[in-house]
Image 1 (cartoon, rainbow, N blue to C red):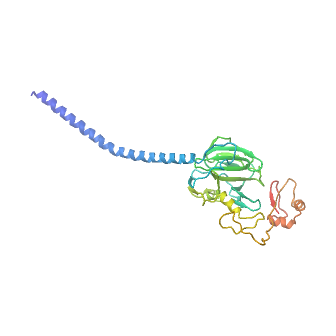
Image 2 (cartoon, one colour; image 1 turned 180 degrees about the vertical axis):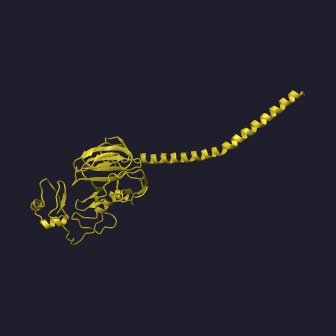
Image 3 (cartoon, one colour; image 1 turned 60 degrees about the vertical axis):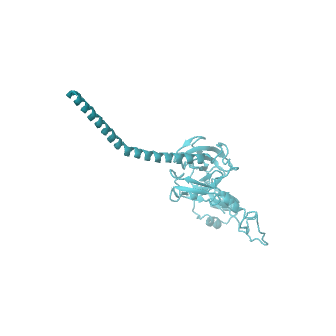
Length: 316
C-alpha cells in the first residue's frame, strides 16, 4: 500500500471516531434537557386537562343563556357538590356596612336571598369576578335596575336596586370593572346594594364567601354541598315551620307535619317602616303615624336634634 493511501485511511478513521464522539457528547448534553422538557410538558398538560375539566363542569351546570329572566332555572338542580374558585375576586363595593343579612324575614314572611350593603346613590358597584353579563333589566316590584353576571367559577352574581346600569347584556367584564351605580330603585327602602350569589337554582348566603367587614373572601375556595350549604331553599323549608299567625310549630322533620297548639302564645307586634319624604320632620311624622315622639326616637336611635333625609327609613 502506498504511503499516501495509508495516510488517507488513517485520516478517515480519525474523523469518523471524532464525529461519533461529538454526536454522543451532544446527545448526552441534550438528555437532561429532554427530561426537563418532558416534565414541564407533563405539568402543562395536567393543568390544561384540569382547566378543561373545570370548564366542562361549569358549562354543564347551565342549560341555557337567558337574557330576560332573572332566575330561569326552577326546573334544574344544583350538583350534589361543587368546588367554587374564589380567587381573582374584587369586592363589589368598598362599603363594610351590611344592613340586612341572608335569611327568613318574619316581618315580610319571606326569605331574603342576599345581603343588603349600605351604599349611597351614585356609588360605584363593580363585578365580583371576571364574567359575562347575562341580564340587565328593570324590575319595578323587586330588584329595580339590576345586573346579573355569570362567572367562569360557576356562580352568578346579582346586583340590585341600582340607580344606573353601566353595562349591556352579553358584555364581557373583568373583576373590579364598574357595572352600575348604587341606588334606591324597585322594592327598596333606602339606598343600598342588594347582592346575591347563586349556583344554578340555589341562592347561597354571600357571607359564606365574602367578609365585607375585612373586604376579603373567606378562603380561596368554597365547596357547595347540596343539603348542607346555607341556601335559601333550606330557609324556605324552615319558614314553613311557622303557621299563618307566625307561631312556631313543634315540627322537627318534614315541614308538612305541624303539631296543633291549644292556645298559641300572643305574638309581639311586628315593626312597621316609614320612608321619609321631603319636608318631613320628626314632629310631623309622629303626628302622621300617631306614634309617640319618644318611641319614634328610641326605636331609631335618634335625638330631637337629628336631621332627617329624604329616603331614610324609620321604624315604628
